[in-house]
Structures are given as C-alpha cells and as structure tokens.
View: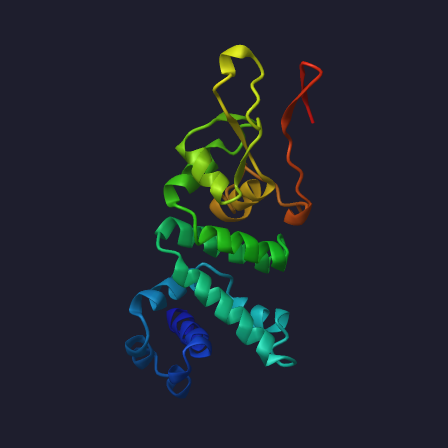
Amino acid sequence: MENSISKLAVSWLSVVFSPISAIADTIEEGRNLTDKLLFEKLEFVLRNQDSDFAEWLKLSEKFEEDNKAYNKMIRQLVYYINAINEVDILYAYSNLLRAYKLGFVSKSDFFRMGFCLTKLLAEDALYLKENIKKDRIEENIYCLSLSSNNLMYNMSRGFAEDEKDANKEYYAFTLMGKMIDKYALSFGEEGKYQYTQKDLPLAEQKLSYTYLKNAEWIEF
C-alpha cells in the first residue's frame, strides 16, 4: 500500500515537474529531485483517500479522452497541497478531497473551498469548528480573520439592536464556512452531520443582515 501511494505521488509530481517524467518509476530519485516536504504532503493526502482514488480521478477527469484535463486537475491539486503549511489544514484538505470523490460537493465548490484552506490558519479553523452551530457571535479576532476568507460575515452592518450594543458588531457563518466544517474540518465525525442530501451550491448562498427601517429593527 505504502509503495503504491509513493508511486502515485511521484506520478503526480511528474505532471508538474517534467524532469521526473523520465524516472517516474524510481521513487528515491523522485525524492531527490523534488522538494521532500512536498512529497511528504502528497503522501499524507493520498494516504487518507479511498483505495480506488487514483482510478476514480482518471475516470472523472476523462484521462483517456483528454489528457490535458487530467494534467490540469493534477497540477491544481499539487499547487493547493503545496500551499498548505499546517498539519491540521492538510488533514482537512484530505477530507475535502474525499468528500469530493464521494460526490458530496461539486467540482466548483471543491476548488473554492480548497483555495480557502490554503489561506486558513489552524487556530481559526478550530474556532470555526467549535462555534459553527452559533447563529450570532460578537466581533473578535477570529471573526475578522474568518470573514477575510469568506467564512463569516458582518451581519449587523454597523447597526445595533439596542443602545447598549451601539459599539458592537456581530458576525455569522457563511454557507462556505458551514460547508468547510461539514466536508473538511469535521468530515466523517459521527453525530455532527448527516450526508443524505447535497447542500446548495456556494454561488446560491444567501446572507441575512439586520437593517434599520422606520425606527424599528427587522431581520431579513
């Protein structure tokens, strides 16, 4: 199993780094020619996939019909994996890749969430995971950081519900924030989520803000 994972990692790298193509069967030479850390990242991600992942990817990207589409997909996977520098986030990306393979998320949403993970701090990810069920959170450093990655948004828009909250801002999780937890950070955790139906595409997410109208606070 370990040998097959290593060979798959080398084959992926051969798509991105052409010098490896001539020695794709020589794993140790592949290690010497490429960044060892990147190789280890690839092995980590691949080790957390289903045993039929490699064949599924070829089939889903129509490997036999259009090699360019397959190569483009591999390059994107390698670039994302290489951009992640924390173990917890790398594990989350492994989960997201598995969720994509199982058909829970679309290709477009997979890429969008994958890109988000490359910019996400593990500390912020943990905060999201532990607070994802809350509907409203008073502004803090985690809210600001997560909102910069489109995982939370300022739901109060500068308006307070009463005088004592006049200087407070409140945040809520976006659909992408919820999907990041469901399909990456907490994927596979029994009891937290059910995976019986697909979520709305991220492009269709709706945000809810508090507005002042006729001197009364209303929620939309």
